[in-house]
Image (cartoon, rainbow, N blue to C red; front, side, top):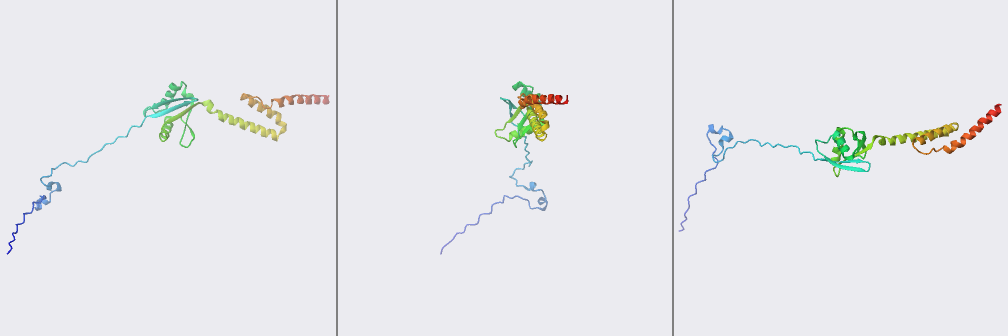
Length: 213
């Protein structure tokens, strides 16, 4: 006969959940029914404050003829009067009498004459590589010279067309073209033609007088 000894079952461990079962305690808030070994803490939302990073200083290149100066402007000093003042100090010129331009992202030369336009130029410059703002200064008279030259070319073209359509006006057209050339400091293109035309016209007038007599 085999004897088997059966050990009594161990009592079940006490549940960690100490939630009360009475109807009065079940109506309490969940925080009031927490186990006794869990500390009660106030749950306040965490607030994170973020501040905008300060704008990096702007590297500015001032170009005047063959002279190039480089400087740096902070965000607070990036205004049009400050740029003119810095150009006066570095280049020794009166920047208020200058024509200031920059090349935009489409390759066009854009004129700058206010703080608003300067900030737009700075915004585009920060997108380029390397991020620097390049301003070119020229005399206002020099900036308008190409337009004046174009108008003179148009005038010569018109005068040549008049001379071809009305040959009788050719001497007058040549004199006008000579005057335009002299105004530009060039040699008159029709000086020889006018010199030969004057004696012949003089001989024609003298012959007319003799025939009238």
